[in-house]
Structures are given as structure tokens and as C-alpha cells.
Length: 153
View 1 (cartoon, rainbow, N blue to C red):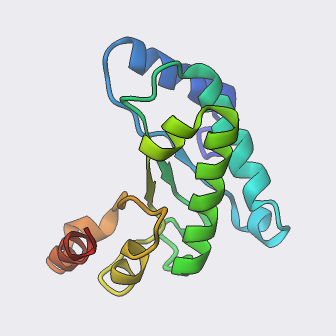
View 2: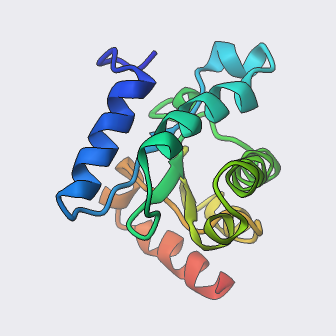
């Protein structure tokens, strides 16, 4: 459960309200380390995405960010293959439960400890549409992340 103890339903309500007010939204979904280790990554992310999808009628202003909680500020990172696996699963879920058109058009960003060391390989993954960068964006070598992504386009 998130630090603020917000339920999936509360997040979905916030997403719906923001969209109703004309804002663009980027809900972050992701699993805890113990959920990953228990093999529940897809189950947790599907549950979170299902709540959001139930609140969204128009996906034009929605960007999904997969941010594994276990990678936030810990220095632990998902391998490019792990990130791709989750992103592909999310896109498949969206295709099956929302529409193939939305699955193709919605951007799914990766937000788990993106750095100059891993951004090049992450940007090569077909279902990783970009990055949600936190602390690394405050460092001078962040330009490496930007350039790596640009060359992958």
C-alpha cells in the first residue's frame, strides 16, 4: 500500500477528477518488493490499472507510468527485460480490457531508477515509451538519459 495509504479507488477518483478539469494525468503503478518476490507483479499492476481504467472514458490525456516501488530511491533497478515484460503485460491488459486502439496509443513510461547506466538499454525496449525520471534529473549527467532516448527514436 502506498505511503499515503490511498486506495486504488481513491487514485482512480483523483484521475477522473483531474481529467474532468482538463488536466493531463500520469498515474504511477507498481509493486512492492515483497509482491514482486511473491510473483504477484502482474496481479498488483492489473489491479491498480483496472481501477484507473474504470474511471477513464477518454485516454487522450493519460500517460501510465510503471514505477516499481521497490526501485524508488533504493538503487535497485529492474533489468530492461523485466521492465519490458511488465510494460508488454500492461499494454496487453489495456488491449483486452479497454481497446486495442488505446493500447497502441497510450504511452507507458518506466520510472524505476532511470540513470545514464541503464537508459540506453531501457530505451530499446519496444513497450517502454519513455521515462519518468526522479532524482537523476537533478544531476548534470541527466543529459545522457535524454540523448539515449533521442537516439532510440
